[in-house]
Amino acid sequence: MNTRNIAMALGGALALAAATPVSATETWSETTMRPLMAASLDAGGAHVVSYFQPVNGACRLTLMIADRDLETKGGSPTRVEFTVEPGRAAFVDDADGKSSRFTCLYSAEAMNVIRVDRLALSSGR
Image (tube, rainbow, N blue to C red; front, side, top):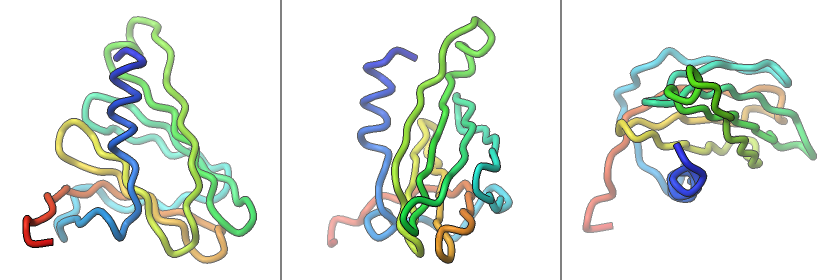
């Protein structure tokens, strides 16, 4: 995956929970992350390793994203960082129509991550 494709995919992928409706059908079991505890996720054609650190009462999330083809050929992952406020969630959309939902819990003491199906916004909204 080249840098331009990654930038375009990530540019449209990150959104707050209030802006991205999801279905009730969840396809992964929920994983609870503690500060600096890495979680390894399979997301479509990519492998994602994530961890977070509490910063000023929020969750500072770091994602290392590697295309599966590049992993076997010695490619480099892409690193993405962003902050999620407690009680809020951020979604990272995959090319396969799924999202990874990262929710900041409590006073940034933990994060939950789960894979969910995406739904399109209706035209009436």
